[in-house]
Image (cartoon, rainbow, N blue to C red; front, side, top):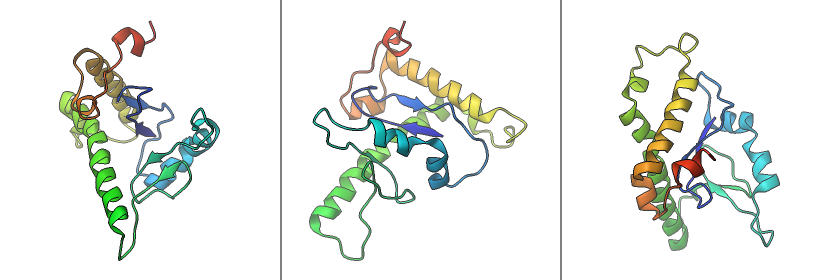
Length: 159
């Protein structure tokens, strides 16, 4: 499971959960396998006790801590505005995946990377970690978009 976050707690860095499973899996199945929903239920609350949520695409189930776009034939103006603004944010969050492939192009060589024969998940995780280090030094399009200052390299690696 690889997830991405833009909360001020991690300053728009790519978050890697090292419980990677290689192979083809549906997003909802990966979510279930990750244990993320249990962690959100346990730890994702404001200081006042209000539930906090993350936003996903329509493949994910709606939950208190996991929201998705409104789906209906006729949406209200507010629902359409919500969908539009969240779509823009979701697209910005996904820029980091393109950054990783841009910096580490060998990850995109589908003919050379074979599930079960190459440690694809490990290689992607290491490249995500290195991309975060680059962000610590130089920022990123995503951190600029959300007007967040990345942590120092010492803060990121907790040195």
